[in-house]
Length: 371
Image: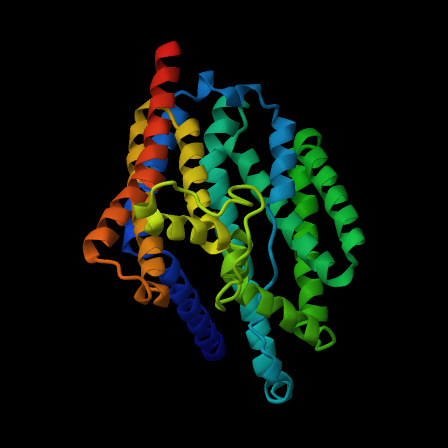
C-alpha cells in the first residue's frame, strides 16, 4: 500500500468516523446499537437451531442464488484519485499507477471479505436445507465475486440501460452455471473471466488516463457514500438552514387550537412545531415505526426487550427535541416559569412516549393471549 493511499485512506476514515460519531452518540449506542447486536446474535442462534422447521425450507435454491446475484455488487473500484491529481499526480505516471493498482486490490479484497462473511452467515441454509457442499459454496463465492467485478467494469463502459441488460444476463449465466454445469467447468470458466477482467482493467483503467474524470467522479461518490446514504434515510438533514415551517395538510389543518385548556399552551406550541417541522416529526415517526416493526418481527422472548429499548430511545429523542424547542427565543416573550416548563415536559413525554409504548404493549399482550 503506497504512502499516498495510506494518507487518503486515513483522511476518509477520519471523515467517516466524525460522521458516525455525530449520528451514534452514547444514548444511541447504549439503547440501540449494543442491544441490537446482542439480540441479533441470539436471533441468529435461534434461527440456526430451528432452521429445519423454519420458513426457509420453503424457499427454492434457485431463488436464493438469483437473489444473491442481484443484490451483491461492488459499488465502485476505488482509485483514490482527486481532481487536483490532473495537474500534479498525472505527471508522475509510476506513482499514479501504483495508487490505482493499490485501490483496485483494496476494493477487491474488501468485497471478497464481505462476500465471504455473507456466505458464511448463509452457509447453514445452503448446507442443512439444500445440501450444498462446502466446495460448491466456494465456487459460488467465485461466481459472485467474478460477476460483481465484471458488472463494475461494464458500468464504466456501458450506458445505464445496457448495464441493466448485462446485469440480468450475467445473473442468468451465473445461476445456470452453478446449478446445471459441472463444478470444475464452472470454476475454470469464471477463473478465466476473472483473470481477463483483471488484465482488462489494468490495461484500460490503471495504465491509461482516458477515463480519469469518470474515475474521479466515481471515487468522490464513494468517498461521500455514507453521507449520501444518511441523506437518503433522513432527507431533512440535507440542509442545516432553519426549515420553513409549513401548515400541516391533515392534522389540525384549519384549527386554531389543539387543546381546550388554556394552561396547555406550551404543549400546543411544541406539538404544532413538530407538525410543521419535518426534522422533528419524521425523526419521531422513524424511531416509532422501526421499534414497532422490530417488535413484530422478533420472537416472543425478545419483544419486551425491544419495547424497553423503544421506550428509552423515544424518551431520549423526545427530550432532545423538546429541549431544542424550549431553547428558541420565542420563550423569552412568554412569562413561563420553570415549574410550567417541567410540567409541560412531563405531559409531552407521557403523550409522545408512554402512551404509544403502552398501546404497543397492550396489543402484544392481547395477541399473545389470543394465540
